[in-house]
Amino acid sequence: MTEASFDNNQSAIDRGPWLHGTNNSFEHWLVPPPKKFCDRLTTPHSAVFLTKHKDFAAGAGAQICSAFLTPQAKVVVPEVESPASEQLRRALLSKPVLNRCDWLRSDAVWRKSWNTGEVMRFAADPIVLLCLVNRGAKLLSEAFPKLPQGEILQVAKHNVTRGWIEEILIVAHALGFDALQGHEIDSRPGAVKISRPWLAVLNSHSLSEPVW
Image (cartoon, rainbow, N blue to C red):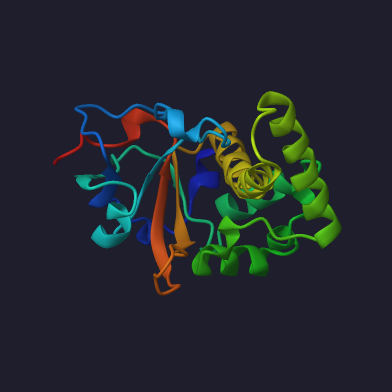
């Protein structure tokens, strides 16, 4: 990738501070983060996630730290019209199954979905979604035969979303980006559904050390 490809309207990049919620404090960032036993059924993520809002960060854990993106970090802001955003969209479009996602059908739809946070949910034809859930449920049933079918289906649906986000992270990393900046819809039970600032960091050297 040429340096020009990273021209992503630099003024749109927010280098911090960003907030991260956790139940366990630490001295140094680990990317990818350690997987918790309680998450053994879910698709793992290869990035560390941060937000700008303390109450949203607290949803991930009572202990909150802050950090800044380093000046050298190459950040893509897909909601901003740029070669970098379009490069990411087209790279995802080249992937089987991923190319069925509604958010990829045009650059305008792509950018808007990052602005609203809707991009964090895999949207596609219902038949495509059903096939993905059924495939995931079959794999879970084989790996965890004692799990109730209702729980398996619930986790399989959740993993479609997690898997979509993880594919975005993998492709962005392969293109040479260190972080993605966008929005996520706050869909926690009891929360007002609003768009929250979201940051995914793909390597530890792109963040300053955490401050608690």
